[in-house]
Image (cartoon, rainbow, N blue to C red; front, side, top):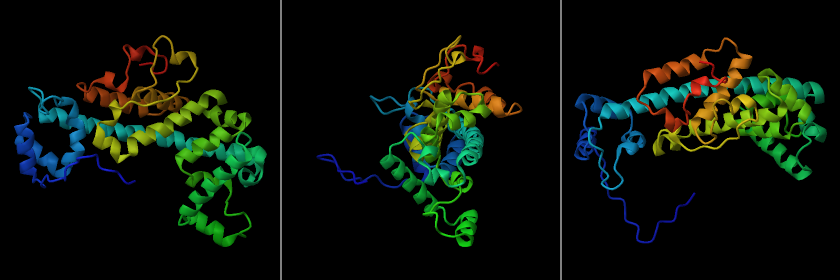
Length: 310
């Protein structure tokens, strides 16, 4: 993407700085802290990456740190953010794999291995043109994944009269998460209900769950999320399921990370009763009590929600 410079934009003339010079710059802007800790951390984590974590501690008027801000506070925010990403991705991966598996079993048993590509009734919701474009999208993703050993075996051993497609149980494993969510949106109510049964959801309420996983992965995985600010304080967007326990006795908002954490916990507790995901999250929150939970969208008394049952 080509960015057009603003009228009167200046040439970038800032020099490269050594780690010692970076520390001096931070200290000149009012940041305090142990020099050795700063040196060690800035040698392992890029100054520009860390800058997203100290923005909340900078005055917009003076571009200086508020009095008393210590580097260790910023570093703890970074460590918390990194650990939270790993926990969140772990939960998303479990839901994603289960969803792919259930979709394959339900759809292929009903419509056959190539039904998604040949039978319009297998994906009844889109119009013909939209459905054709969606199949082209899957075809391209299969082409991009042709170095996959399973696909190599299929395309070399079997006849090439499937118009570039492969059985659903192969295609479903290589299609991107966004494509998987779109596939679910195009499925019949019966298929969606069958897929969501493992989560104890009706088909109607499962779509926000799948979409939530997609949004969560987007906000966790993109480098831009690291550079702009800690991802857990970002404004997001999701549809809260129309299920009573999502609204009483604690009402959730749909614009912060907490709703995605709740979605993951809700799903994992229902198809993996021995899941340790919730315990990992709660342990992390206890380890970093200074991280403001309100910025993640945690409502007051969220522990009283039946969705968490703490």
